[in-house]
Length: 169
Image (cartoon, rainbow, N blue to C red; front, side, top):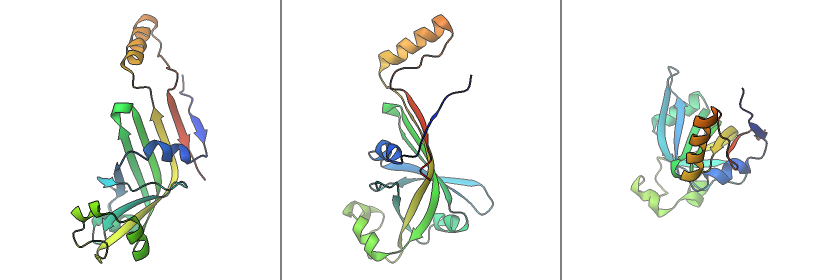
């Protein structure tokens, strides 16, 4: 039996789920087509779904997104059984005003010269589509699901279990 997945055009469903998850795994394509993933700190997502990341201009990811703008971001919050995958298009932004707007002193760990460092850039990701799995994390819910599966051979679908695709465009 095929799984029914709700489809929405409301990007706020994705933003709401990732707003408190600060680290994403950003996947880009290297020149030979192989995939390369690395952790990235996500700044406060914009309501329209635009995502911002600080990076270095001389970083390999800059070359990768200039060759192929398609990226994937993976977010997870296992303690809440929340998982989000976002596909989008990345661009490199060197606008000093935007860098200063998003700058916070915690970034100095990676950028010791501060927001005026000429090697700082922003990576902007515009969401093309996303998918999320948001399940109740209660141990009793999972225990009940296990018992039902053993007893009936059927999968338990708890109330509040959400799996949806978001296509904002």
